[in-house]
Length: 190
Image (cartoon, rainbow, N blue to C red; front, side, top):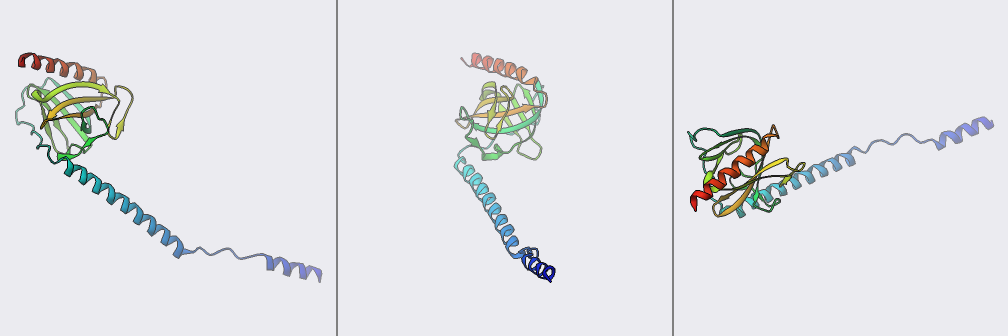
Protein backbone atom coordinates (compact mmCIF):
# COMPACT_ATOMS: atom_id res chain seq x y z
CA UNK A 1 0.00 0.00 0.00
CA UNK A 2 2.80 2.37 0.76
CA UNK A 3 4.13 1.63 -2.69
CA UNK A 4 0.82 2.74 -4.24
CA UNK A 5 0.80 5.96 -2.19
CA UNK A 6 4.41 6.71 -3.21
CA UNK A 7 3.57 6.10 -6.90
CA UNK A 8 0.54 8.38 -6.64
CA UNK A 9 2.64 11.11 -4.97
CA UNK A 10 5.36 10.75 -7.65
CA UNK A 11 2.78 10.93 -10.42
CA UNK A 12 1.31 14.08 -8.89
CA UNK A 13 4.75 15.75 -8.79
CA UNK A 14 5.47 15.06 -12.46
CA UNK A 15 4.14 17.64 -14.86
CA UNK A 16 3.55 17.22 -18.51
CA UNK A 17 5.93 18.99 -20.88
CA UNK A 18 4.99 22.59 -21.57
CA UNK A 19 3.26 23.13 -24.85
CA UNK A 20 4.98 25.64 -27.15
CA UNK A 21 3.24 28.99 -27.13
CA UNK A 22 3.07 29.47 -30.91
CA UNK A 23 1.15 32.74 -30.70
CA UNK A 24 3.91 34.24 -28.54
CA UNK A 25 6.68 33.00 -30.80
CA UNK A 26 4.96 34.19 -33.95
CA UNK A 27 4.43 37.57 -32.32
CA UNK A 28 8.15 37.87 -31.52
CA UNK A 29 9.16 36.85 -35.05
CA UNK A 30 6.75 39.34 -36.65
CA UNK A 31 7.95 42.06 -34.27
CA UNK A 32 11.59 41.32 -35.13
CA UNK A 33 10.86 41.38 -38.88
CA UNK A 34 9.07 44.72 -38.53
CA UNK A 35 12.04 46.12 -36.59
CA UNK A 36 14.50 44.96 -39.28
CA UNK A 37 12.28 46.47 -42.01
CA UNK A 38 12.16 49.77 -40.09
CA UNK A 39 15.95 49.88 -39.71
CA UNK A 40 16.41 49.12 -43.43
CA UNK A 41 13.90 51.84 -44.37
CA UNK A 42 15.69 54.38 -42.13
CA UNK A 43 19.06 53.48 -43.69
CA UNK A 44 17.61 53.95 -47.18
CA UNK A 45 16.08 57.31 -46.21
CA UNK A 46 19.47 58.40 -44.83
CA UNK A 47 21.17 57.42 -48.10
CA UNK A 48 18.58 59.43 -50.10
CA UNK A 49 18.95 62.40 -47.75
CA UNK A 50 22.74 62.35 -48.15
CA UNK A 51 22.27 62.27 -51.94
CA UNK A 52 19.95 65.28 -51.83
CA UNK A 53 22.46 67.21 -49.69
CA UNK A 54 25.09 66.53 -52.37
CA UNK A 55 22.82 67.44 -55.30
CA UNK A 56 24.92 70.53 -56.05
CA UNK A 57 27.67 68.23 -57.36
CA UNK A 58 27.47 68.33 -61.19
CA UNK A 59 26.95 65.24 -63.33
CA UNK A 60 30.03 63.07 -63.75
CA UNK A 61 32.08 63.32 -66.96
CA UNK A 62 31.26 60.44 -69.29
CA UNK A 63 33.83 57.97 -70.54
CA UNK A 64 34.73 59.01 -74.11
CA UNK A 65 34.12 56.59 -76.99
CA UNK A 66 37.80 56.76 -78.04
CA UNK A 67 39.78 57.80 -74.95
CA UNK A 68 43.17 57.18 -76.55
CA UNK A 69 46.00 54.76 -75.99
CA UNK A 70 45.98 53.01 -72.60
CA UNK A 71 49.00 53.74 -70.40
CA UNK A 72 47.80 51.49 -67.56
CA UNK A 73 44.83 49.21 -66.94
CA UNK A 74 43.52 47.68 -63.75
CA UNK A 75 40.76 45.23 -62.88
CA UNK A 76 39.48 45.40 -59.34
CA UNK A 77 36.91 47.07 -57.13
CA UNK A 78 35.68 50.61 -56.73
CA UNK A 79 35.06 51.22 -53.01
CA UNK A 80 33.51 54.68 -53.15
CA UNK A 81 34.33 58.35 -53.00
CA UNK A 82 34.57 60.76 -50.08
CA UNK A 83 35.30 64.42 -49.55
CA UNK A 84 39.08 64.73 -49.87
CA UNK A 85 40.86 64.32 -46.56
CA UNK A 86 37.70 63.13 -44.77
CA UNK A 87 37.69 59.38 -45.27
CA UNK A 88 34.29 58.88 -43.59
CA UNK A 89 32.33 61.59 -45.47
CA UNK A 90 30.93 59.39 -48.25
CA UNK A 91 29.74 60.97 -51.50
CA UNK A 92 26.61 59.21 -52.81
CA UNK A 93 25.44 61.65 -55.51
CA UNK A 94 25.50 60.39 -59.12
CA UNK A 95 26.23 56.82 -58.04
CA UNK A 96 29.63 57.61 -56.49
CA UNK A 97 28.58 55.80 -53.31
CA UNK A 98 27.89 52.51 -55.09
CA UNK A 99 30.61 49.91 -54.58
CA UNK A 100 31.21 47.73 -57.59
CA UNK A 101 33.65 45.87 -59.76
CA UNK A 102 35.64 48.31 -61.87
CA UNK A 103 37.94 48.42 -64.85
CA UNK A 104 40.29 51.39 -64.77
CA UNK A 105 42.11 52.64 -67.84
CA UNK A 106 44.60 55.49 -67.68
CA UNK A 107 44.96 57.49 -70.90
CA UNK A 108 45.99 61.05 -71.75
CA UNK A 109 42.30 61.98 -71.27
CA UNK A 110 42.32 60.73 -67.66
CA UNK A 111 41.09 57.66 -65.80
CA UNK A 112 38.13 55.83 -67.31
CA UNK A 113 36.20 54.00 -64.60
CA UNK A 114 33.94 51.36 -66.16
CA UNK A 115 31.62 49.72 -63.64
CA UNK A 116 29.23 46.94 -64.62
CA UNK A 117 25.87 47.57 -62.98
CA UNK A 118 26.76 51.13 -61.95
CA UNK A 119 27.45 54.49 -63.62
CA UNK A 120 30.70 54.68 -65.58
CA UNK A 121 32.64 57.93 -65.27
CA UNK A 122 35.83 59.68 -66.30
CA UNK A 123 38.28 61.37 -63.98
CA UNK A 124 39.72 63.96 -66.39
CA UNK A 125 43.50 64.31 -66.42
CA UNK A 126 43.18 68.05 -65.67
CA UNK A 127 41.13 67.24 -62.54
CA UNK A 128 43.73 64.87 -61.02
CA UNK A 129 45.43 66.24 -57.91
CA UNK A 130 47.16 63.32 -56.17
CA UNK A 131 47.44 59.55 -55.97
CA UNK A 132 48.47 57.67 -52.85
CA UNK A 133 48.20 54.37 -51.05
CA UNK A 134 46.06 54.33 -47.94
CA UNK A 135 44.33 51.87 -45.65
CA UNK A 136 40.73 53.03 -45.69
CA UNK A 137 37.84 54.89 -47.19
CA UNK A 138 34.23 55.08 -45.94
CA UNK A 139 33.01 51.57 -45.29
CA UNK A 140 36.25 49.79 -46.20
CA UNK A 141 39.42 49.40 -44.14
CA UNK A 142 42.30 47.22 -45.27
CA UNK A 143 45.94 46.71 -44.40
CA UNK A 144 48.19 49.76 -44.74
CA UNK A 145 48.59 50.57 -48.44
CA UNK A 146 45.74 48.30 -49.47
CA UNK A 147 43.78 50.97 -51.35
CA UNK A 148 44.69 53.20 -54.25
CA UNK A 149 43.25 56.64 -53.44
CA UNK A 150 42.92 59.13 -56.28
CA UNK A 151 42.26 62.76 -55.30
CA UNK A 152 40.52 64.77 -58.00
CA UNK A 153 38.45 67.91 -58.39
CA UNK A 154 34.85 67.82 -59.55
CA UNK A 155 32.59 70.84 -59.55
CA UNK A 156 34.88 72.78 -57.22
CA UNK A 157 34.93 69.93 -54.68
CA UNK A 158 38.00 67.78 -54.02
CA UNK A 159 37.11 64.09 -53.90
CA UNK A 160 39.02 60.97 -52.87
CA UNK A 161 38.04 57.84 -54.81
CA UNK A 162 39.19 54.45 -53.55
CA UNK A 163 40.14 51.50 -55.75
CA UNK A 164 41.60 48.08 -55.01
CA UNK A 165 43.23 46.08 -57.74
CA UNK A 166 42.84 42.32 -58.05
CA UNK A 167 46.66 42.38 -58.11
CA UNK A 168 47.71 44.69 -55.26
CA UNK A 169 51.28 44.94 -56.61
CA UNK A 170 49.88 47.25 -59.35
CA UNK A 171 49.01 49.98 -56.86
CA UNK A 172 52.56 51.35 -56.62
CA UNK A 173 52.86 51.63 -60.40
CA UNK A 174 49.55 53.50 -60.55
CA UNK A 175 50.62 55.94 -57.80
CA UNK A 176 53.96 56.66 -59.48
CA UNK A 177 52.46 57.06 -62.97
CA UNK A 178 49.55 59.25 -61.81
CA UNK A 179 51.75 61.53 -59.69
CA UNK A 180 54.23 61.85 -62.56
CA UNK A 181 51.36 62.72 -64.91
CA UNK A 182 49.98 65.28 -62.41
CA UNK A 183 53.39 66.92 -61.93
CA UNK A 184 53.90 67.11 -65.71
CA UNK A 185 50.44 68.67 -66.18
CA UNK A 186 51.09 71.22 -63.40
CA UNK A 187 54.47 72.07 -64.93
CA UNK A 188 52.83 72.79 -68.30
CA UNK A 189 50.08 74.89 -66.66
CA UNK A 190 52.67 77.15 -65.00
